[in-house]
Image (cartoon, rainbow, N blue to C red; front, top):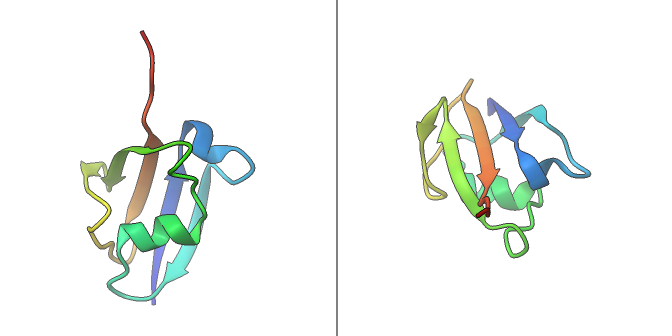
Length: 77
């Protein structure tokens, strides 16, 4: 088992959390974490994923102690 810290931003925080620690199995992919914490990517698509401040994608894995930050796409004009 690994422990990671997940940080959610903007719309993803609504009715969820800002920062929370979770335990997952080794070699879990970010896409599986996104499904596990029930982020509605149909309504708010993923914009940026960071692991320890570095860009990652949904197929990346996380390691014990990592910080996963997930941002939705942001519109503006």
